[in-house]
Image (cartoon, rainbow, N blue to C red; front, side, top):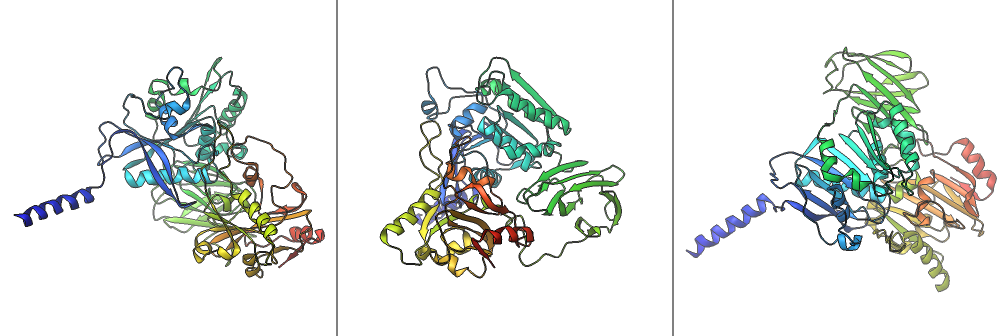
Length: 553
């Protein structure tokens, strides 16, 4: 009898493991494990009342604003403002009851008030991947919305990854400046803006410029302005579940007839059936491609050097037949293929995959400097010259300042919850070399890692003089190293801009691949991008050499 009971118990245990843990319907909080800093990062989740794991569900990603969090964001998108006389701290402690919707809804914490580029952006994408692993998501019904800083994140992530979303809905958005040149990327999905007419934080004029820019590109744009409403226009925008009713009317078309796409980085390389594989470094690469119902294809490009087209499932593609295209005024006939590859050389566009050099820029390794800080990275100070205790403490303090993303910025902005490691050159482990980008402080004389890579690195500061600084990014195996010799990149800078992150990291997105400066980055002696084979242009070499402050490999 005992054997039978044991066997039955074991069967139920195995069955329970096989079926997986069941999540309750309604609001709750889950986590992702971030390999950026080995922490658990939360996101708020809503599951429909009658959730059935066998069904595919539409998904809404909700991005919170500055000074807010994932729990408040989930409340906001369901139209639940704070109770009378209740502050955000109190409102974050519980989820009130709200009307059920047949959507899965997720609100990433995204490190707090950090904007939605870099580390926070990676968190949002990791939350999306986690949701796809846990649940069956309808890939053609994924929607993006957010308010204020999150509205800006909605614009940014909507434009840089256009083929993910069926529709986006920014509320009083404050997007990064870089988004303004990408407005045409919204061509194939609808956009609904919400704005307070008297908003003192995000003035209506700025949102109207976004609307006008998208309309000029042919985007289906809706703009609603609430007269006299201040910055809290989300109260009106999300009232009575309107946003879910609006999303209900739109489904993604993964194979649109026309694609418009622009990018400066290969990390944002894809739009529907087109993928960029090589672009002119630092330039805005663009494409406009139309595949007509009769199978004819017209393409215009700018600053684009290689791309591919996956037309196998496109309804307008005549499978198995040669493809006639007109690209940049030139007519070509391409041999039949499920996927077409083209590259540009001195003679024009050619079908095929361009032969790449051993060291070449690609989506995972193309720079600029900010890219290294958007992934797993470690800050490394030097001990190679056996510095005094006082000097060692100074070097470690510099590295700690660079790594201190979580510095307290007051009750409203709080802390950015990102915790990269700070170690000496002697403490760098094989796993760090294999898995992380290294942010290296010092030079060949002071940092053992830089010394070990001396013959592979392209630029070295000749001798620190207290007046000059060198900062650059360079690939090393499958990762980056960032070298900061001499003055730190944030030396002598004045506070400016929205303090979503510390000044140390606020300036990182403005860097190209390298900069040599005197006194501060505001006075550069030479700056620019490496070429696609990670070499310097002759112009860059000339400027760097003429400074008399660096040696080149």
